[in-house]
Structure formats: C-alpha cells, structure tokens
Length: 522
Ligand code: HEM
Image (tube, rainbow, N blue to C red; front, side, top):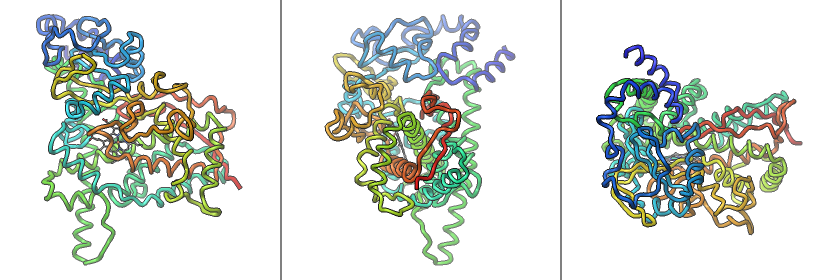
C-alpha cells in the first residue's frame, strides 16, 4: 500500500482533469472496493434535500461510483456544454462527479434565475480544500463564503483599489515592441502581454513594478499554479471519503502548501517593505505618493480588523484575479485579429484616426470614441470568456423552472456555453465584432451583468470586482499594440496556423505561445 501511495502521490501532481483521474482511480477503487461498498450509498452523493425528489433537474445516465466523472474531459467547459446538448438539457443539468453533486447551468435563462432571481441563494462559493490552503482560510474575496467578511473585503477593494498610472507600463511595453521592430525580431506576445498586465497590477498594488527586482517570473508562475489548483476539478472534492486514506489528500495538500509558502514569502516581503517605507516617510515628514493598495490596506487594517493572513489573502486575490485574466483576454484577442487581417485593418484605421497626429502612446482619453475597439474586445470575451465556469453554491433550496434545486449544491454557470448558444447568437461560433455595434444584433448587449447571454465578468453579488480596471487595461494595451505597428507571423508560418487550443484552469489560457513580428508603420 505504501508503494502504491507514493506512486499515487507523484501521479496526482501531474493530473489536472477529471478524466485523467480515472487512470489513478481504477486501481485505487479496487483497493477500496470493500470500503466503498459498505459506505458509499446514493444518499451520500445527494444534496441535503431528500434523495427521491423527482423534481430535481434532469441527469444523463451515470456509472456506479464514478457518476458522470468519466464524461468530463480536459476542457470541462466544453465537455459540460456537449453533455448538456447531447441530452437536450439546455438549461439545467444535475451531474454527479464521484460523490459530488453538481448543477450545471448552460442557458442565459437559467443563468438569470441563478444570478439574478435567486442571487442571494447562490451568492456563496463551494468549499475547496485547495482554496482553504492557498487562500488563507479562504480569507480572500473570490472564494470566501457569502457573509460579512466577504462584504467588507470586497468593499475595501472596490473603494480603494485601482488608482493606476498606466503610462509607465505602456511605455515599457512599447519600448520592447519598438526594439523588436527595429531588429526585425519576433515578440513572444504571451510574454509581453503578461509582463504588461503584471506591471500594471504591481504598480496598482505596491506602487512599483516587479521588473527591476526580477520577481516577474515568480509572480507569473505562482499565478499559473494557483489557477490550475483552483480550477475546481480536484479529486478530493469528488471523493471526500478517499481523504480518510490520506493518499490523495497528501498530494493535493502538498502542492497547495508549496504554492501557499511561495505566496507567503512574496507577500510578507512586500508588506514588510511597505511598513518600513511608511515608517521612514512618516519620520521624515515628506509627502511621498501613497495611493498604492498595500498602503491603503495597511492604513485601514485596524478599522477593518484585518489579520495579517486576511491582508495577504486580499492582496493575493488582486494579483491572481487581475493578472491572469486580463493578459489571457489580450492574448486571445490578438490571436483572433491575426487570423482575420481585414478586422485588424479596420481596428487600426479606427485607432489611428482617433489619436492625435504625432502621439507615441494612446491614452485613456483617446479611447472614448473607439467603438470598434470595444466591439473587438467584447467579441473576444464572448468566444473566449477566460473564466468559463462561474462557481456558486446554494445555501437554501429554491425552485427553477419547476425543478427543485436543493440547498448545499455546487453550481457551475457555464459562461463559455452561454456565449456560444446559437439560440441567442447569430453565427455563434464566428468572430464577428460588428454584432456589437450599429445595427448589429447585439449592439445593446453589455458585460455589466444584466445581459445573461454574455457573462464574461459574471453577474450579481459575486460579479467581478475589477471589471473597470480589467477592461481599461485591455482596451488601452490593444489600442497601443495596433497604433503605429503592423503585425505579421514569423517567416514560414501562416496566419491560419495560429492555434486557438486552450489549457484549462480557473482562468483559461491559449495553449501555444503567440509569436508575432512587429513592423513600424511610417
Ligand atoms: C479582463 C479581465 C477580467 C475578467 C475577464 C474577469 C472575470 C471575472 C469573473 C468571471 C469572475 C467571477 C464572477 C462570478 O462568479 O459570477 C471574477 C471575479 C472576481 N474578479 Fe475579475 N476579471 C477580470 C479582471 C479583474 C481585475 C483586474 C481584478 C482586480 C481587482 C478582479 C477582481 C476580481 C475579484 C476580487 C473577484 C471575486 C468577486 C467575488 O467573489 O465577490 N478581476 N472576475
């Protein structure tokens, strides 16, 4: 058993998707069969409501013990959409992943019921072992259960965060592009966009960039590891009874603790730096710039009664929620534009005509009239919502479309499926920004949370706390990328070769690096 355990632990670290767990779970089940036969009953797998409620949402046929786990592949948002489609459960579908019941919401109508009509019932988040370890409790905003602490933490971020001077970060990115253009070299766009957003978030949170300290790479790695761990498909959650054997829990726990330790070191040193700096500033009576977020958190710490773990969790949320998302949106958007040069030209024409002659950098003030730019980003968010599955949790039972939704149920709103629902979107799989402008069919549709066919930032109480920051950062960078530069694929490659395959995590990314050659337009 111990050799099996260590093999399993090593293997666990490599596994990230439900179906891949099966390779490990099959032999494990053989070992545990006696235990599972005696303790695993239909009742265990059901939410708190009674098991025989025939008004529960419909479920496809399931296997014993595994439930529907074998039907969820490496891109869960795609598998869940296909499953709902195949069985005609376009709105609500109840699955059982191992012992874990899960409600999947796949239509705008059902999403409205969950996120607006019954907002309070679904405003909490499901418990997650990983979030408890990595996010200090969790004491962040995104994973904390609905309640007073969440309300206070969210208020702190929405009131004080995000006074950002973006110019410096843009200038650095522009210099990098300019150097590549002069040398005729290719730029790794995923890297460039990641660094830009990284830089922005660091300036907002700590008032300076990480570049000079060489911590950029560390932050990017931490964000990637955290996203994969928090993606929500951990075997612990499907088979809580296996945790009693320690085999599975040790592996997930060990990886989560490693990630948490690395965050801890980074965040501790940032907070200490700031504490030192402000003691020095106070002593010298100088009026140094003090509008960065760590300073704000430190100064309201007493008022909000924050422990140091809670402070770190909130800071971690800003880095994690702000950096991974916005850079992935930019990456998907540039890739889509490169595959369609006529759309790129149209965007360039708009940006160039809106920016006063001779300006090197496009500023936020120049963005006001760029309707096509905004349509391009909306269309990118529709086809590629970078948080494709919105995790919620029912704290009371309610009724949706005549179905009983019990209390204590995990819920995933499939924002990816909803944005491609052909009942609501014409040519749903095509990239057509024009649908969002003029007399396009979606000209009135926005991402502010009241159009349930378009939920890239979610909706309701748990809607993204950084929409404005995120959108402004993405719009500004995209405008600067296309202003005065043309972009080409490296020699020997074709635009059509740009691969839109994804890697799943809480935040979805494009799988392959985007390498592009900038040319300065004269
Ligand atoms: C374009 C970039 C971004 C996208 C696409 C995005 C998307 C999302 C989505 C889909 C959610 C979940 C909503 C739900 O569960 O219904 C979310 C939550 C959140 N986002 Fe963003 N986000 C972005 C940028 C940011 C930024 C820059 C911040 C920084 C403040 C941020 C902070 C948060 C927080 C704190 C939450 C948790 C809210 C809660 O649970 O109360 N996001 N985001």
